[in-house]
View (cartoon, rainbow over the protein chains, first blue to last red):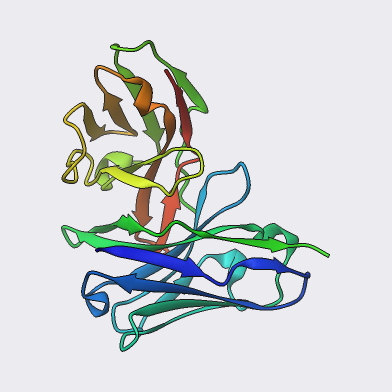
Length: 122
Length: 107
């Protein structure tokens, strides 16, 4: 079964750290770029970060640059998001998503996990 | 950064046609992708590359893109189409991925 399953969310105090995981199954994980997308309560979708299929390239939205680190272990079919110095505004459901290339000019998210909720609160 | 503008809400009667717009600077030169998200669920891709549908998505969902506006059209709207819809592009200048703010479709 082709799926992504996130884990690691929870309640954390401001300034603390958390690591999210995303377990992939049913497809060749090492062939795909992978993303994290988040959604604050009652708000829209916000792209967070991407990692290339081999881990050699990573990009981040400005608001998390220097605080979040995306990584992957292709031998374990797992994607990670290490989050440091968490802020209240990082509170959101975090989705991992598989990226598919479109005509070498764009990418879209064709497979999503169910998400894991991160709540940053004292 | 690149901005995509969507109307906050669209209301449509069952059996009618819903049109959801997504505006952006020269968006007609971009590949636009659309997602449907129902309450408490993950987003689902419904249109990619402006007008292509993934397998399993009904033909009632179609897309178009020209000039400064991309449009997702839902024909013969059903109660089950009630959801939030998001457009998305890749900003080549920053290598970032941009979503519109979303449109809530009420049937």
